[in-house]
Image (cartoon, rainbow, N blue to C red):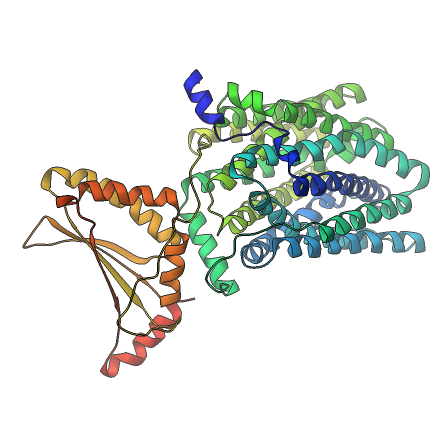
Length: 550
């Protein structure tokens, strides 16, 4: 990549530690590291507890799946809530559920009535809480900080977690080996309570929408439509799902590697996890330097290859030291991939939908990890641990090659702020649910500009459709071929207002391109109308209008 391209790639980024100058972000970020220590202690305790009370390799691997499966199921719902309600309140509710799961595990461990399925159930409850906290926290980053600080903030979140991961699992292993799982669960609960106290004290401003909240089903539908029409987000989601499916073998099978292949106990397992976290921490600190040297696509490809090398090394080594070094390589690949994909989704999403796009990304990535945990655990149980690791390494090489079909584009500094829509004056009084609304925009295009016009209109169709336009089409006048009419509908007047409030300053640049092509240099003529049915077709059309709003 050329020097100019590298400068363009990082022009929107602040120095890695710049977001810590914001007191709200700094407070929550610092206490999040404490709660992350508790989460890792709880993970080590649950994983090792399952390895000691169950002889099934699948049950051990399902510990990872038990926390990722709820994220797969609930994240889209959580994302819609994050875009319509207080993200801070959603974070508080999610961490309360996580604290409850840890407290219940502590109580049951103290009573001595834990069994494999009970452990999975409360691990799953922790995943339910995580499904709500992750979209709310990551979407809040853009509310707390300036847009140019978002990549650095996402990197800091990853650095912080992996810094704790470099020592947390080893510390957790020592606690479990010395005092038992009960102590680990109690300490984890206390760390969650500390984070809840901090979230309760800290508040941040969020730009209020001038429109009422969307119905939950409509919000989910609109978020899914926006994602489906955004090439950059779809590529990031697809790569994340494939990477999660294949790379989760490292963490899902690690308790078996420590127990069966290396003959170690909880301390050895903690050391291996620390190796993974150390590699992730090191590459996280060097993140900006790496992105100045290599494109995001190249980094993502190399990260998959690094994780494949980690899997192969774990399949053949019997040394804790070699395994820890291999896991450092895997941890580096892990953080490069997830940080890059997370930022790609955030920077491609306007604020009105960022919670939903992130939640869809988390849901499908977690779905991949859930399926991968079950898949590699089944292969290990039916064949061998080495076979499962070798197969996942081969699959990771295929994922690295998927960039040829699903490339990750370089981050761009697009302006996703609303451009300031003013409600048009109407001669008729409309209610929010009045509709359908028909929008017609007339253009006068010279024959020499038709090809360029059609190119820009293809992009306009995508922009308008993902903001909420329905039945978009373009017509050419047969009697005056220079006249073109853009037509689309919205189910209601409120949907029309939402569509225009969702359009961003970056989208408005497209209007300027079309204005230059319009003959006479005058703005295209826009008409607003409302459909009305008469006679026997009215009931049928009312039903059609009702279902179009769903």
